[in-house]
Image (cartoon, rainbow, N blue to C red; front, side, top):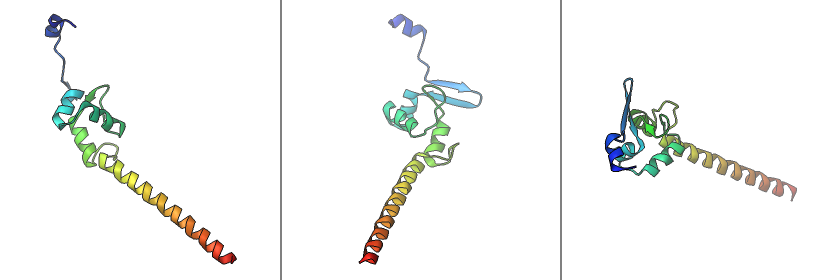
Length: 107
């Protein structure tokens, strides 16, 4: 894009939709002090996005502290993963114990 076109068509960093202000990916990353890659990783983990490359800062705050729209948060995803891991380990240990009991019972 030529410098002349860039001057005529400034890049939008915010958009207003009703009573909400949406930020583009760069502005969102800047406001949280992270990279745009981190923002994409957050979206992969469930961070709310408003269309391609647009984000509602209030929704992100809700997602990060656990009060988001869908009840899942950045912290919640970690807690869910930890719970699944603990449950799996518990079931594995229980199965091992039952196998030992059966072997001892046969002897």
